[in-house]
Amino acid sequence: MLKTKIYIFSVIIFTILIFGCTDDSEENIVLPSLKPYDLKIIKGWLSFQDQAYEDAVMFFHEAKEIDPLNSTSHIGLGWGYAMTGQMEKSISSFQSAIERDSGSTASYSGKAFVYLAQRNYKKAISNGYQAVLLGGENYSFQHLPQVNYRNLRLLMAESYYALGQYDKAQNQIDIIDPENDLDPNKSDYVEKMILKIENLGLNDPILTQLTG
Image (cartoon, rainbow, N blue to C red; front, side, top):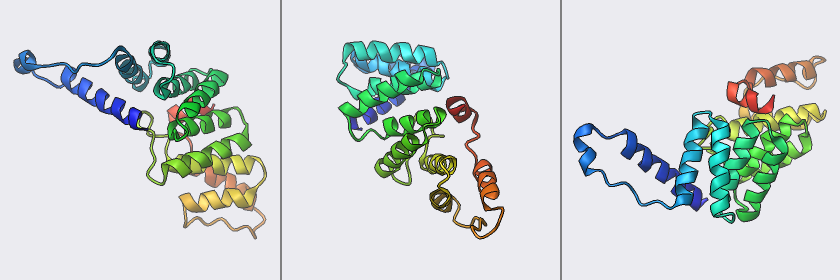
């Protein structure tokens, strides 16, 4: 996680220096001395945030070729592959990142959403739990803020519902919306639960693109 934070800081510095300076101050600019790996990672995340996912994959792959032991390129590849519909490659890349950094919340959350897209609900739940355990209530993936604690809980609610484990789905809904009016003693409980999940909604266009 420390390396990821370093790269995020580098992105901020790089962006400020390139885009945030006036013409009058350009002669005073001193670009940071970044290694080729770092530059590839920066370009990868900037491409990702511009939704140029194929370009992001290219940059992250080039970074991996430079330093295959660093987890950050594998995380980037996992997300890039996920957003381009290459789900098996995405899972493999996230797993490679976890093997290099067992505390990679971004990788566990990525796997959770990919498994949801594949309708592999048990694995979506197990990876979602690991992500919220590591990330805590304030977790939000810095490069895709829609991937956060709340939506991971909602992902688990949807997955439990799909498995017919309504009591566990209710537990997740209660965390997200403690004042919900779902009543397990009513005959329309199951129907209202899916409506509640839909209303709480993984309806962000980017998440919809990811999960289908």
